[in-house]
Image (cartoon, rainbow, N blue to C red):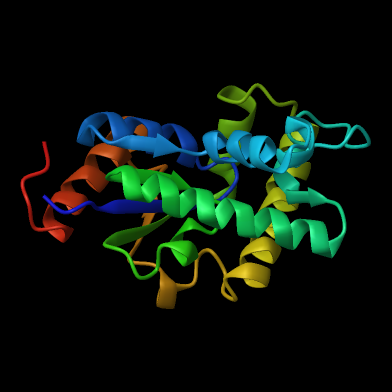
Length: 200
């Protein structure tokens, strides 16, 4: 069976990451997210904190999410993106997988790929941040806007389109309708149909 890939972009607080993890479990394929950051740090011989978008000046424990390639020079950020691109392609060569963020939809645009965007109403995302991510109400309100804007800038810079652009997205799902497990099961059903094979 030919390898297939599912890329997931998501709004902050929409629970895209746990949905991706559950989807990988249902389909029995690999899931990649932070693994890419860790491998980037290793290959570039830089501290993991630098590769994982975190600086000591960022007070919030979620602040790193607002800087997908850190806050270093443009040259360093481009180098990091190039390294991450190669890592994503190498991981894809190993077999079917789910990739979260990192412009994987752009990197794998010519692959056998289903591109998904997960969103939810802001009020629901706020509750997810407070109840599921244990954020303070103030932190939740601030980070929802901050991280979404940063992810949009990141995608526009490297992929030249927004993560939610329907011209570059196959499926958009409101995760508040079905929750983590229900959304993952829905995506698994779509994946089976899209790739026209009995994925177990």
